[in-house]
Image (cartoon, rainbow, N blue to C red):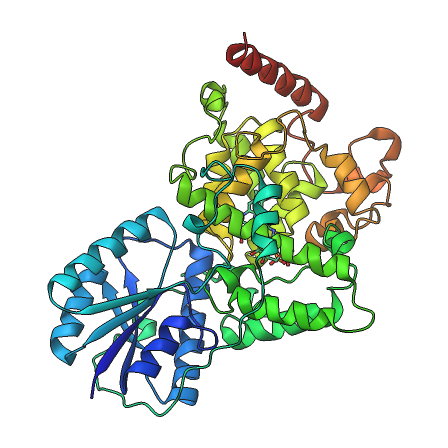
Length: 472
Ligand code: FAD
């Protein structure tokens, strides 16, 4: 008889979960546990997700393995030590996390447990390639996506699925009640979330199937059109590890065998998972990524950080319809389409001159897919200060972007309903008098809070000053 503790973290699934699989294979008694770490704070949107995802995980554990998920709140090391003492655990299993704080925490826990003579086994449960396994020809880490992904992609092949065996013993261990953690928001701004999301492994699997069936074809083009919702919406499921990238890879490889599969769409979709890997890779090699410019010449950038402009942006009241539609989609659903994320981020940093870190913080609080690696790398990319970033002078024009990617204003009308009576020309820039039908003057919608072309000129001037400082 031997007992294993499986510590669930960002791997809230049973399928293709290497830590769970190994624990169930090597021990006859298994204790699955989730610890709400007092030192790591979720944004409000993700707290809603975690509540529902843990509930789903417990249901699957009971149904498939006849095990109950043990919930505890506190400092992970203290709780693990207590569980080890009270249940005579022989070994602990977990899948690795990659945020700097998690790496530090896990190292400490591993060393302490080993001192107590407890075996600790950790696994890669969430990436195709762990960050330290890929380097360029000089042995350094890649700073540019394309050669990085080329190196990863060549070696990428789907591994067989791992399903935990199910004839296990359980132990009676005290658990907190999920409701006691009060993760659900105190007021009902998340009341619409269940219309958009089903947290948990089953929800993730359905999303993947639906995406492969309906949207893999044409993905490369359609992924840019917000009204179509033609992307996978797997990002929160991936963040919480409710689905493994290997499961996604297998599904895509399988779809590629179909006679009319859009191979370009399939490859492009995999490359987006590549961007996720690259963000994790950057965060590992540059742990300061969430709070420091990757390119340090941006350290002297004269951010304005105007509170009231920031508030208008957060509330979706900038007077630029595509920006406001994105910010309101975020508030209502905990998600925003990728194209629109780029537009609103460019607007904040190069239109309002507000520090990308303030935008990133807002996203971390309101996105259900908030992910330190993806969020930091993406904000730095848009702001122009990141690795392999969009050049600073690439300033998204919110009106042109809107005309190009939402030509009929369907996305805008969905999220800014007060503009729905405007025609397809006026809806992108309702203040331009030549386009304004008389109803605009009666609508309670703000005038633009900035003049985009003036901001653009200013942004380019700042940029040329930065360049002069770096290359005098
Ligand atoms: P799909 O198009 O279906 O892509 C599949 C998966 O690939 C995604 O689920 C995601 O895991 C990954 N992916 C796609 N695009 C990117 C990208 N540009 N960078 C890294 N990974 C990517 N993504 C997050 O998961 N969390 C964040 O906090 C986050 N913040 C962002 C902030 C900004 C300013 C921007 C511009 C992008 C951000 N992204 C973030 C990346 C991207 O917008 C989302 O991953 C994507 O919109 C999720 O939708 P999807 O699952 O339908 O994507």
